[in-house]
Image 1: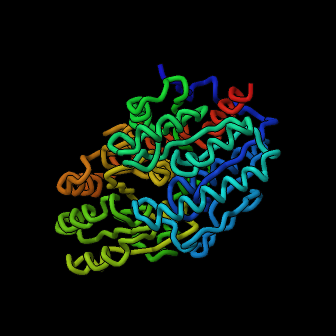
Image 2: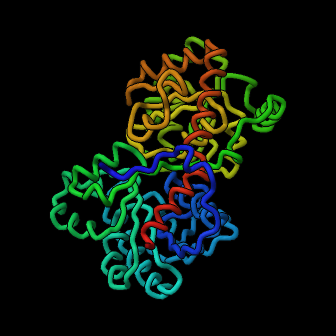
Length: 406
């Protein structure tokens, strides 16, 4: 059976100070952009807090600021440093990834005395190119698979013509971390041994992301110019595959029932302008706010009433965990790691991805039932505190590192 840490009573106590030396390799390491990037920052800070000697290797970006205090980050300069969305396959993105991988390999060699274990965020090209070096150096290698999207990382190579070449190399990885059952099953299907796969979900800072008092919520609504009720919020990248076009179309039906609503979109990406144009074409411009990249996501969540995640594909979305930690009722598509977190009808409402009618119905249902909103929000918060707090998840990482060190 696949190794799987369960967050039971045995893991409630903090692991405490450790003598572990870990290097995090994450193409993006910024608290403002992308789920994997934000998760890498949050987990690294928690590991350092718990006494793990941690150093980070990441890409140098020229387009986005994001202060990271108390973390030693060694940046790799690459081509197109203004580009941070590498999810779409293109020659440019491949060259950026290859550039970072080679730079990371050089940094790893120079820093080889600083770590015993290397943790990759994404089992993709940087892992592939750095594995031979790390194995020669006698280092343990852990790779967290973030979504397994076709042809770009372990767990997503099924229909990729280079799979017979890549899988044997990836098998030198000491442990794969799968954040969801779906990703775990993909890795198994691809041919990796059960012994090298472990399921550990993403975690969220349940202290920073927590419900505000009603008086504070009203203050935040006034601060952002939001109405005092009926504020929907989406937080994430504004790119293809996030289901935002479906959300726009669902808004048409919702506005017909209740025109005292507001949809707030947090994030940025390639679809910024086209979504704004779509909003104008559908006559929704006065019902939608595009907020762009922000640092105070927790405040925006507490100024909102309902969270929506209409994606077509996700690993285990941080934005969902953050919203639930803030006690928001959530409406999310029935995909990937979402179904591992949201208990349909208990801690949120799930709908089939791309089902505009189903999404609109869920939105209208929560608009019309305040008691249900409160119930779902309370259960969502409890779900996060019980099973997905960053403190608990960091303990699971430390236990994994300690086992590899033996």
